[in-house]
Image (cartoon, rainbow, N blue to C red; front, side):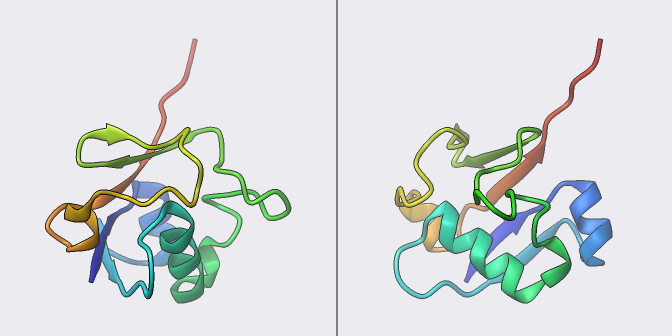
Length: 98
């Protein structure tokens, strides 16, 4: 069971708490996690990644085991601690302003 921490705006949209648990078959990657999230919570489709390019939205970041995986290829395997469910995969909303 994979633990995923979502930012407030996505939790509100999906009507869930700060952490959701999803099943992943096969390699645990960013793509596999987002695919599973969108399958379980269809209202999140297009909010984490672009509908057509499937690239991560600019104001979202991906973290696992205190490391930024935002610029890693989407099929890069995530750390074992995330795959085992001992550490969460975190989707964090970036803060910008002037």
